[in-house]
Length: 328
Image (cartoon, rainbow, N blue to C red; front, side, top):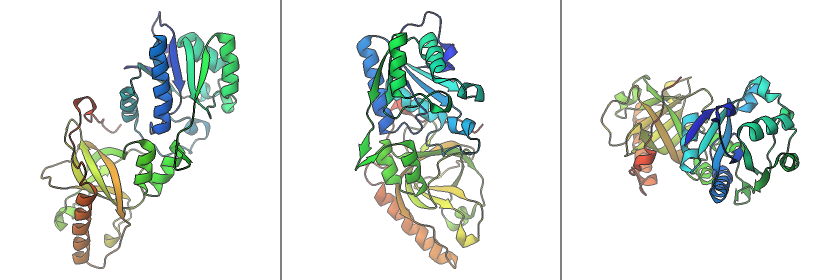
């Protein structure tokens, strides 16, 4: 898959293409259906498939301070999109100037002049242009003018709920990682670099990796979770019991993500790793002494083993071995 920074990176002599457009945070089942349809149609037409997405999130530019929690880091999102068979990922810098581009100018400059769209695939709720003034009906009218077709991709739902990034963020925020996984089609992933904490877990017999995540990362609600730990360049994952919260037993104030890797003896400091959340085990509890805390952690570890019993620590295919990236 080619990766372009900006639509003006399209090479000279670029032919026709099938284009789909969106933020695609999470690359959830709805996104997968839309992108998959674009890839299929591109192959049928014998042209290239192009996914156009934006960085940073448009909400942060249009309404500063409103940046939503991020479900997939940029590198992860690119990997997931590539896995769908896309030919080109075009990341458009979403600047204040770009946000003021009228809908008609967006179509002319991006879709026609640079990407030479033969077909544009979008979701039924697609909006574009300054103040989101453009909709699918306008896109179809402009398509007739400029010579490209438009096909809508239906929304994808499960149990009567339409899958969307907003819905998945609400699931993660509530700690319902099972519902989030159902909408994503895979476990919710949290990434970060391992930094030194208080080393209290080591004193208790359960050394943890203290994960420092990016600013807008979608961190699940406080509690204890069963997860799979994915290390950079490693094919085999590790079972992990994950604690999210402030460590109330020790009167902590800083919210932390700490993962205890089961059956692992080694140093993870400085590593960039990922946690795939499989199950929520319990909420946070404040203990009056160390003994009941250790007993509870022991039980949490056993429940983690049970939750991950099916397919625990699977081998990862070579083409999707976790690459990760450093915190910028």
